[in-house]
Each structure stands twice: as structure tokens, then as C-alpha cells.
Length: 637
Image 1 (cartoon, rainbow, N blue to C red):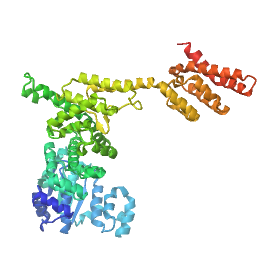
Image 2 (image 1 turned 60 degrees about the horizontal axis):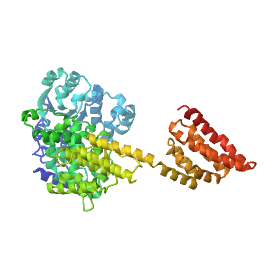
Image 3 (image 1 turned 90 degrees about the vertical axis):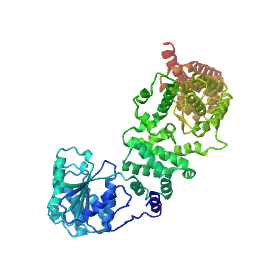
Image 4 (image 1 turned 30 degrees about the horizontal axis):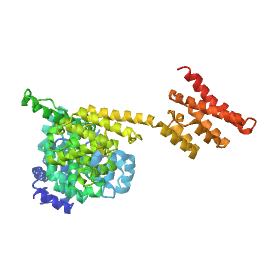
């Protein structure tokens, strides 16, 4: 049966197909010979030897034997499966075997058996209820002397905590004295005990090597997932096989995790993305490569963010070395390669330098297990897959791998013209274009130097600042904008450009202070409580008050009720008592002007209650502020 037909059959049914009475699995399976031999072995009366199934971690040993056990069930053969993983004494093993043989079928039986080591005494009480047996009065060892299971399977031998000589001697008891059929499953490469080989020679009569059955495993892994994902994986079986071959990976546990992770990502995709094979294919390729390389300890999740830099470095080296007559091909090929360079070489046909959705997204996915659905969706919307006539030219240039040479040249001219005409005001977009031009210049696809590009970018920021178009509301990011990572961010020119943006924003903030002062005064007129809140938070260490005309402030101040006047004065004094910031000294002259105007109004109303209250406010608040900052700070400077 062809693999494709097998998958199509599986799509319509999740049932296991038994091809003959000997329970042989798919005849095309790489391990069908093991099935045949196990059928023969299990039909022997008392073979007097055990069978060893060996294979490296992740080769599918446990998966294979459990598939075989399913077939044993269909033939009504008796068996007991025990994982030796973490077992520290023989009693734990005997309990597993004993419980599988003793307990009749009842709801939750498998759960009880799996958790015998945890439930301890609680289980004993429950077992009597279900079985009629009092486990305190039964010796498992005595029971095992009359064990009626014909086949024993011991899995994970290499991960057993019991001494090798002891555990193999124990297993030999069943083979030699009870005449049982015993199958042992192990990764021999992980067994370091020198006694192992000597004991193995006596106990093991047949050793069979499990070969990673990629096709059979994948068929099993996708049997219970969403039908749309299943069909997509079936249609792309050759792609999956190709990447596994390039990776030289036989680990089926990684393959299972890839299927599960792809299913998880698929569920979070926008509906239209789920119907776009190109998106799904790119996600699958990147997921597979990173999964294999990370889980085989070739790279760390944090290394993903360095892929772009490594790619630029490799391209540059190849570009310039092609002109050099002093570097032989042997020298080029024998250079020491980093793990990331080897990855580019291994998967040369896949664009890992510009991973989709982006490097940051994948790093968080593998490092912390975070699946950022919002960023995933935004990346898709900005991707090449959904470009149309409304897509910005710079985004199309960003996704240039889909362009022809003519389209690339035409598009870069359009973006360059838009850039020169100052059509962009978003800092992030300008950063993207600057990074693109720097990258293209670096690899010889753009005929202007990085120094000229850097100078033009700074002049662009100057233009925005001088024309009050520079967004000063927040400091721009250095890594990405609009869910797209910056190309060229590894260049010194790009980082210097980011520094220049920050410096320009900080300078623009200072230059805009008079306007901010007027807005603050407007707040005072509209809501004095909001005014007080703002000077305590946004301008806590900024001398913003000096930009409010003292006469305007006093005019509004005198119209307030006495309680509001006192509240404002209290907040102003508290502003200076809570910090010791010399920058606020710039407000000292403003407070002196305020005090003078308040005294003038108090003298004008001398002998009246209003005059007295103004004098009181002056003495308790304004004098205190001036004396603290004037006497202690200003004269000491």
C-alpha cells in the first residue's frame, strides 16, 4: 500500500487495520520484520530467553511496542507492560505486574494502575472494595510465582534506578524459572554499567534494532488532529520528509511535538490564513527546523534573534570573497563554522534570515511557550501573502524575496523617491526604510553607501523636528515596528540613527516646553485638580511652571475659592518637599514673581479678610518654597 493511500485511508478512519491473523503491521513498515519475529516468539511455549528491542532515544521504541500490544489485545494474548523509568526497587515493579494481573476490569482501572506509587495505602483500601482481596494479606512475590501472564514487556531499561545486575537478574527469573516470554526495550547507548554485556549474553537470545519508522509514526501522530491540519500535513509529506533528511534526524518524539505545536499554532491563525497554503508551509518549515535544532541542543531559542545578523555576514563574506584571488576554495570551505552558520548551510533553500512571523515571536514561542496570537495575526496582515494594491511600497520591498529583478529595481526607486519627498512621518516606517537601504547597500543591491544613507536619515529626522512633525510621545523601539523586525539593525549606522532619533526627541521635548506650559495653564483653568495631578506625575522633575506667565497664573488664582487656593499652594509646596532636584531651580524666579504679585494684591486689600488670607498663603507656602530652594541651593551653586 502506498504511503499516500495509507494517509488518505487514515483521514477517513482512525481505526487500526490488522492485515492478518499474525497481527503484522503495515507490510511496508521498516520494522515489519520485528513484528514477524515477535509473532513467532510470542507463540513459543517456553523459549528460555528474552528478546531485546533496542534503539536510540526518540526512535519510536515505546510507540512501536504499544502498537504491537494493541494487536496482542485483539488476539486475546495475555501480557503485562511495565515501564522501568524511575523505578528504585523491585517491589515497585512487582506491584505494577501484580495489579495488572489481579484487578478485574472496572471504571478507572488504568488510572489506578498508573498511580499505584502515589496512592499507597489509599489504594489498598479501594482494591478490597473492587476486587474482594485484602492487599495487606497478599504477598506480591508469592502471587508472581503463579503469574499467569504469558508475555512480560519491560520498557525504559536504561532509565531504571535499580542496579543493572539486580534488575536483569530479576527479569531472568521470569525467563528461566517461569518460562515466560519477556521483551526488554532499551537504549543501549545510555547503559554504562560494565556488568551489562556479561549478563545480557546469558539473558538475551535475540536483539532487534528498532528503526525510526517516520511514515508510520507521522500517520499515527496526525490521526487525532483537526481534519484541515491533517489534510495539509498529508499534502506536504514530502516537505516534512525532506527537512527531516536535511536535519539528519531520526527522533520521532520531536516529530510528535512538531505535529502538536503546528496544531496549536494553526488554531490561532486568522480564518483566511488557514486557507493560505503558502503561509502554512512557511510556518511548518520554520517550526520544524527550529524544533529539531533546539531539541537536539544544536542551538538555543535565544539564538534565533541572531539569524539575520549571521545571514548578512555570510552573504557579505561570499560576495567579497568571490572577488578575492588570495582565498582558495579549500580555505573557504574549511573555515570554522558556528552552529547558526551550519544551519544556513544545511537548510540553504529556506529563508531563515527572515523568519515568519518574526524572530522575536519564535524566540518567545520556544523559550517560554508563549503563542502571541495578536502579533501572529498582525504579522500575517503585513506579510507578502496578503499584499494588494493598497500595500505600502516599503512593505512590498521588505518582502522582496517574492520579487523579480525588474520588480525589485522598480520598487526600490519608488521607495527612494517617497523617502526623498518626506512622505513618511511614522518614525518606525522611517527606521524600516533606513534599515532596508542599509542592508541592500551592504550586499551590493543598492548603489549608495551606508554613510550617505545614514546622513540622509538624520536629515529626515531634522526635517520632522523643525516642522513640528516629530512624534515625541514615546521613544521608538530598536528591534521592530508594525510587527516586523528591522532589517539592518545589526549595523552600526542603524544603531547610531536610533541614537539620533532619541536625542532629537529629547531636544524637541525641551523646545516644546512653552507649548506644554500653555497646555498646563489651560488645565488649570479647566480643572485645577487635573492640573495638580499632572505637575505631580508628568512634570514631577521638569521645570514646566516657568513657561506659564505669572500674571496669567495669578489672574486665575485670585478667582479661586480660598480652599482651592490653599489646595493648589499645598500641592506646589509638596512638589518641592518630596524631591531634591536641581532642575526645578529654574522655577525659582517664577515663584518669586508669584510671591510679588500675591503680596501686591494682599497690600491692595490690606485691612480686609481677603488681604489677610493672601498674606497667610504667602507666608506658609510661597516663602517656604523660595527659602528652601533659594537659600539652600541657589546661593550654593
